[in-house]
Image (cartoon, rainbow, N blue to C red):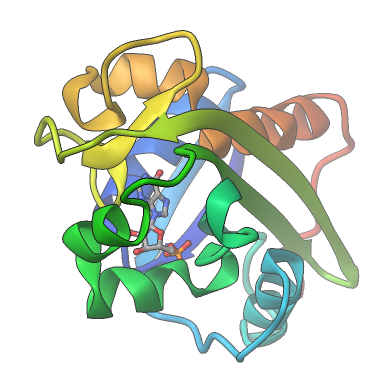
Length: 189
Ligand code: IMP
């Protein structure tokens, strides 16, 4: 079995990633810590700087960064989603969208670092922003994000359903497919 160390402070992300990669025969262990996030314009820049902050000689590592991009606000909060969540929160986002189109896309960039090799994959899920928070499953913006084609928010859906449809699931399945078809990752970093 291949193994990856998922570095994140978010237990919800870890549960999702472990479940998805298990199906590809990849065992995910959790290194619970916050990595420095530079002020950057793209999720990919954040992911590469997270990979660069990891110690050499251990790994291979999996890191990711995600954001909610609102159509009516030119993609804001996007790469600043954690800041927006901490400051204005779900109610602030709902206020900003009052009277505006409610389309949105959730994006994830996932990165794998093993020795000199580093690569990233992306995943995205389109949807709309609900008019009020609904459901208590998941984390972050889950109670206000309704994936396209469904009526329930991620917060109302079982974890298995979020993992079928989510931005993170799409990126992480790409990681799984790539690892399943690849030679063993180097243990050195
Ligand atoms: P980060 O990837 O941890 O930087 O996430 C940015 C912000 O988006 C944080 O406030 C997260 O809680 C939120 N977020 C990331 N992924 C998800 C998700 O799958 N559902 C809901 N919120 C998310």
